[in-house]
Length: 153
Image 1 (tube, rainbow, N blue to C red):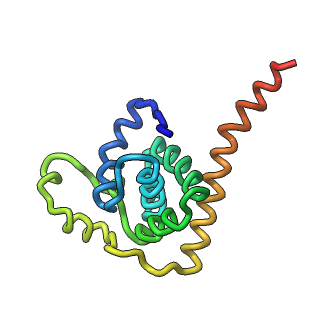
Image 2 (image 1 turned 90 degrees about the horizontal axis):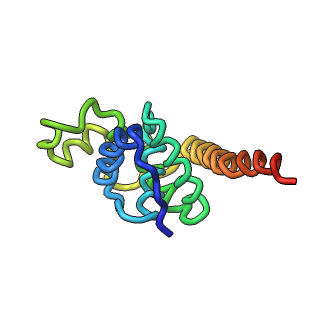
Image 3 (image 1 turned 90 degrees about the vertical axis):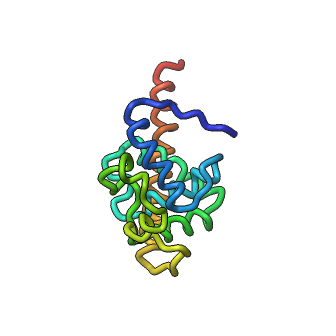
């Protein structure tokens, strides 16, 4: 099912970095499965989405969806970026940056080629982010329903 997302200025500002993360991580940029994978990758990285709040919101939605529909893939993407940085940490993703080699950028950000073994802290933070993502999704449903019930006899 396609998900239509409005494109306000805050999302436009984050989109180039988000799309670059698809390339850096090697994750599909088309469809829900790719968005679930990149949510794990972006949230798992050191600093996550930084000050790009719209990216946090969208990623938490897809993180919750992925925890239900493809938890192993989500956990793998999350693990792969633990200890690494992502495109949200880069000073610029324009100009001279565009002439850089993909392998050099991955090395600079410490993005591993394969999924490392999970430790207890990785599992703990994955569960913590999962709980937070479910709370966000539930609040986006429960609050409007609760408010609507005030006006329904």
